[in-house]
Image: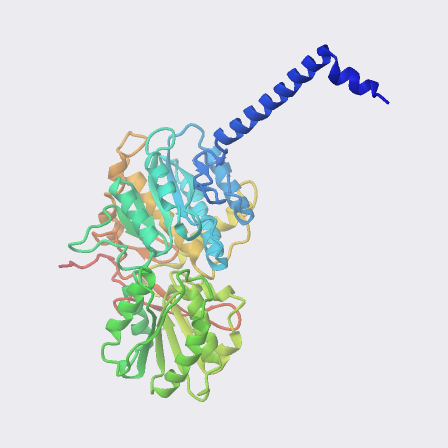
Length: 516
């Protein structure tokens, strides 16, 4: 039997025409939609100045609006919002911008904690600086993300180089925190553009200027170099090289490990023992297979007459080594491990076998700052020079003020690792340079003049930092900077003593000696 509906829709001439038109229209619409979706670029923006690079889901670049954007990192939201509120108080200026260049989206647990603390410390100094007797210019703070492992440093740096004019008035970059090849390249690019850079926790000797080697004109650092840390540890421990050996990473290209290894090697030139080698994974935060290597190395350590082990490596491998020593076969032997500031990561590392620290094993590391370093207590009197309790207490008061409304909250602040303290001091150096470079009667300094201020940060013009005096030599390096020696314990890391690269605290004038 015929279907009348079929007949009416498809077989009348009129309906055939209508059907054809509809079908062609649908096909045309579909083709346009496909072409449009294929040719329209995906919107990968995250915020003004911030985007996701091709092949990455990280938001990298510079949050140039300074409005509290936290790069999708929940742990940074409170301090980023506080920075945004403080920036808003500056209105139309006059202000100078300081950028914090850090791997804000790092996946390393230790580095994530470090980054948070650095943001908090820098904000404390920004807040304080903007309330210093109406000094100009005001200080605006923006966050710059180089991404995991600093892989996208160029994206952030290229944007920063374009921010020296209005409306940003970028005058300095701080937060330079990891001694890596990527960071070295970032510092080189920024300083070549005439932008002042203040390193917070970079300690590698080769990311620094020196006589005959001005690779980074305009770079200043507030942390001692690895060479200075090593000499301070040697003075502290009164190490007998004949009873000491070195364990170090052979993975090259890591400026922290390479320069610390070189510094320790120079100290142990008279050691009868060849160094014990291990090779970490390309990503030093990865566990890799080095734990197996350390179990074998501990056997060899037991075979020696050494009682002191210098360790040159990153914190993941340091933790593995300590765990292996805790299970060593010669537990009747006592050992002391001396290492650099990477030891500060282990205070909160849940994978550290803390029972190892009670088995005749002492671990001391050279910290960059510590909350107990300048406070007197029974049995300890802080040095008379090189820093002061007053400067540290000023930091604590400012931190307490910004931790609550209306400035804060800024999140829980941990001080034991020294990161907040050292970032506060780096920001203080940046503020000093910006304001000293500002001509009388002007609102802003020329960009290049900020980077020229470092040779005068010494003597009576030193920065009285919360971590200690910041007295820079002509190359932007701190002279005889205080090095707190800290001991890992089952609980919180414990401050032991102050050590000095030169063997004693600096003179009251804090003037670096002439260098060849």
